[in-house]
Image (cartoon, rainbow, N blue to C red; front, side, top):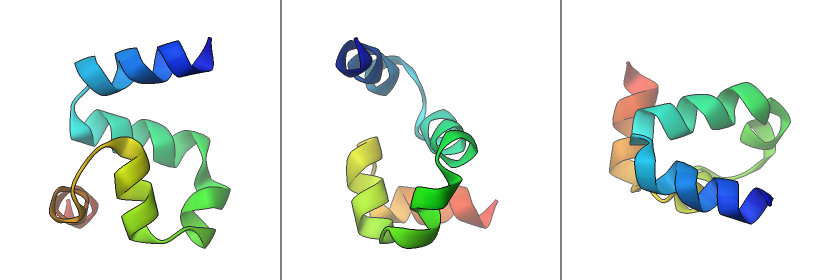
Length: 55
């Protein structure tokens, strides 16, 4: 069930929406995981993630 939700989420949400949702739900992971791992999990590039974090 979670995998299906994740696939739908990745396909239909913007990179910013995915990052914000992940940040709201998984704050403890953001503190420990590398930015590259987070970007890969969200299906976005490091450059996109950097732009999102800058805003």
